[in-house]
Image (cartoon, rainbow, N blue to C red):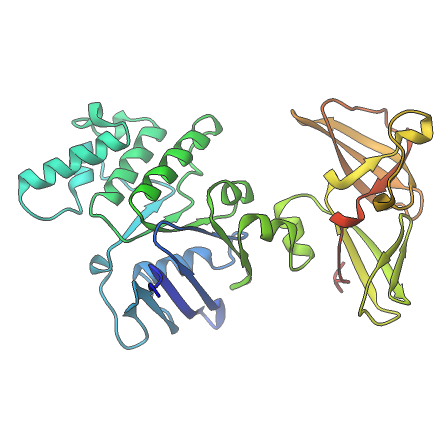
Length: 361
């Protein structure tokens, strides 16, 4: 069986007595894009720096193509790891031309270096800028040059730390897609650090969701989104509604009816969590629209508190009559009911998650 392009085993790093990275392990195959996703301060960038070799781990091992490159005794220097780096600020050398920047990490005869520079600039559509300097380029153009420079030495692994966050929304999607296509063509193993769920869902073959120094969930984007391990994992990808209930006879009673809670002891509090798009406004009670389905359970009465148009959908906030809790609902298109309007809501039971109640909630 072929060894992973990158494998890290039980990396640990502490600063001042605080563990920042706590037993992180993952592997990446050639051509695979893995996103290390999590909030600021969760240990993502520290993990990246240890792999790059600019930060030493307290314990754990790093392998490239099955060969050990770093543990707490043996260490391959960063420049010999065949690992490319891309950062948020692009880190181009202002005193070097575009050609000089791309050639910076190359070795060998001058003519061969020039051929590789021209090849990479052609691939990122920057050939006509070859003699210009970074200050003469836009943000998107600088990002393309940074990609060409990172790929020019033919790294086996590419580490990317929030590389697109400095670009405006108009450019970001296109450049991300172009970058991903080139990395796939090069068969490079990619580890992308981001705190943006949309970026991870768009780019990743696999997401490693990180929190408090640990990977709490890892898998294909669809699985991480649809099978979250806890309430915080649901909320990280989108707004999340929560109902608190107590289990009796393996059932949790809510204003939306009973929910199954198999294996949960009687008297245990649980959180029933669901996303705004999985709440349906029951217009049938007003004599219009489809009636309820069995999967939608009981309707609960609520009062509109606020409605906003978000572009492709509307976000409506309700206050439940049952306990006064706030419920967020998304509706396709334009739907802006007046504050104070009474409506009935139903939720998709198959889209709800039941977790042990959080003490701090």
